[in-house]
Length: 208
Image 1 (cartoon, rainbow, N blue to C red):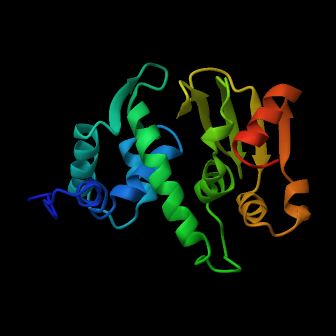
Image 2: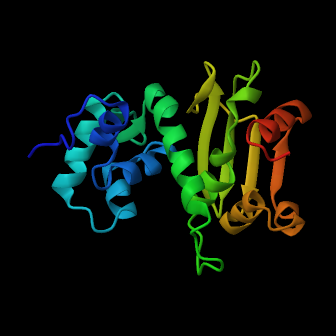
């Protein structure tokens, strides 16, 4: 089965050839939340065929955006994660699409998934102009689900060490804070860490 949609000498067409296949962006969305087992991805994407998920993961690996890693005991599992190139190239695309879709979300959702809270409430605010010399890891706990990531080598990366800042919140409160629905949501978000790293975190993700 061909994966080439447009075959045009155009950067937009070339990007769409990779990212516009069905499920690809949602797989990348899941990997922005951290390493995932194959079964985790399948459960998070109801309706995707098993062979199609495998094909999409192989394509993302071939493009250098994702990779398969073996986690040692006691976990001892195969996981999929974004590469550094994936963090650099995928996040701006997800960010732009999320901004486009944010105003189209229902005003009163029945439920806000933890990953949506993390992506909208935290990652969508990332501003690389405020990076400075930041080189540290963070943890965001959303409705009991932990998302670990960091800032290394001038951009967002997978976590490599212990978090220096930990945020605890409900997904709904993170989204409400991002869209500016008042101070009540902000008051319910817990922030733990030393003053310097907390200040950098709040600035980097435009939560200040």
